[in-house]
Image (cartoon, rainbow, N blue to C red):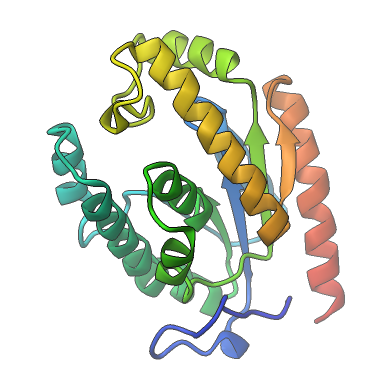
Length: 234
């Protein structure tokens, strides 16, 4: 498979050279269709004979329940939220991602450190500090960022849930008391930060304004190329 490495230092007890499999990340805002695309990708890869493991934000057995309860109270400070999410990420890295890669599985990540960095920076964190916080993360074999306009996000979010989420609207930042205005502003700022991250980390952008099937076919074509490249190195 493709060579594994971390952004800076490896986590304790992890030798990237001894990891196989593939780590494939699908990024994008809520209501961008990420989860649907990952479910379809998982089924497609399993049909091709690959073992697949899935990870995502707030799925750590260590802190996910506590993080969810804290967020429901709408009282988390930006620094506390950063450290909560970092703990969630590294627990999954140690107990889910690394073991799956050691077993040769394909790991599909429903968002990764890029969403966490973007969120923290938009909330005022120093970019260098946040990137250092995640410097022991494994470098994914491929990252795909699903993009769509803030207006489309509003429509999809209201259609799916009937309301705008407090955190995904950036209401804790205090830009505006109007939920709609805050949501559009916050999502635009996140999108701008992803533009900076794309220049730095070189991931691919996928147009998610298209149909579910068209977006899926685009993802499969790109991932199939990664698979062929990885298999060629065996």
